[in-house]
Length: 258
Image (cartoon, rainbow, N blue to C red; front, side):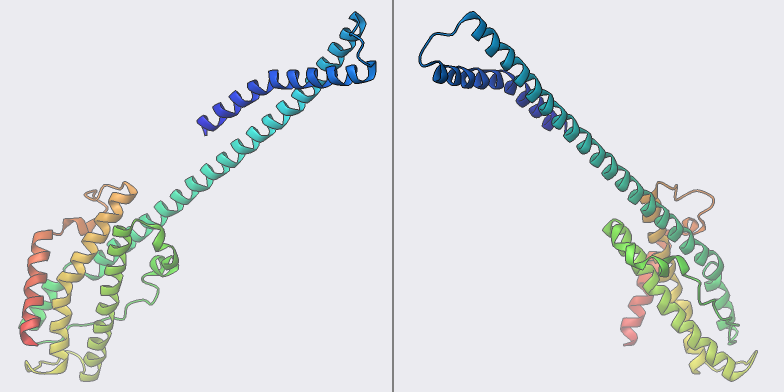
């Protein structure tokens, strides 16, 4: 934009002598045509000079005003564009921040400590109590799915991956809850029942889901500038190496079962 204005300034000042020259030549030719070849008198020269100055001054004033208006319009458009970009960045940052804490809250209230609980329950051949999850648990994500494409690709990919695994977790959880209700409370189960198998799958899905939550929150924190290790982000307490090892072991076992 600055280079564009400098080029316009150069063109404007080059136009000044050109305008004077063109007007002088035009008036000179016009005067000669009507004087039938006679030489110009001093008064004639003064008249031509006065007319030339007045015409050139008026023309240059108009040219300057047009140029000034054009610059003001460009500045206004640039300021509006900068303001729109700034507002867009603010909105993206706000959405990313809200999703980060939505994921972390889900981890805090629905994932943390659940695996140890399920291990204990399953070792005693009992079914876990499974409560119904509120339908609006992911309100932020569901309300902003159309804007995820505005986030950096690695951030959007991690967010979509987490919510995809979370929905699979919900489906498995609901199936386990339905089977639990069908059998009744506190029923000791033999190892081969459907409910026990479902509870085992639910437990085994937790390392992968927790790892997805950890990765999504880390990338969202990097994008928003929020310190991932800050006390308010609980999923940061998870050890990534342990999650990776457990997830790979469970996936390996599932492949061999197939």
